[in-house]
Length: 265
Image (tube, rainbow, N blue to C red; front, side, top):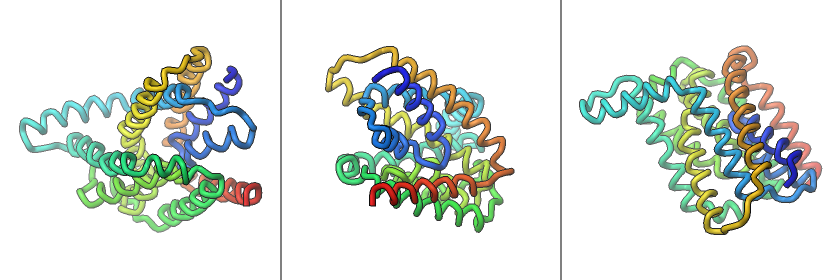
């Protein structure tokens, strides 16, 4: 991989990881449509680490408060708002982890085709639009009860299917159970931290087993570019979300899906 390919793919990862348009789909499609070689496991780990760094840096104050409150709740058994949010993030990750263990190999071998991505891009885009239009949007992320967390948690497991978008499906579920747009996005971003950790850990373990040599310059470039672009993406997405809503992303998903159907049907 040369540095130009690394820059473009890292930028794609950083900009799409937290937008409801599917980063995995774009990382699959960009090399396919550009006839570039596969970027390899080491680069995938690098850009996941970059986006993880971005979301942890952006929510650092909330994460510290949640961590302190969570440890206090273990001792007192009376969780406050931050502790309940921390528990929601932890419990909301369980279905994704279990689904990854059970279905990862099947998904990797059978569901990475452009037509699958086109179908999920359009289908879950329509669901996102429906949730944005009809959801009551009356709750913040600190007012999630158990059943709402369960709905979002099981929806996140669907993100293993390429084209679904982890952020897209969790924001969709959040809107459907009553979260407002910013609350749904913020909870989705907090859920991304353990999700990205699991993905990077899995890919990293395969990388260690393979024992391949690593080109360090593209790796470093991938970490830096994905981290900076992801941080800026989170900031401006949350800042502009109430003004623009989900419609621009829904339209993008419809256009992308239509292009993929035209190219690969």
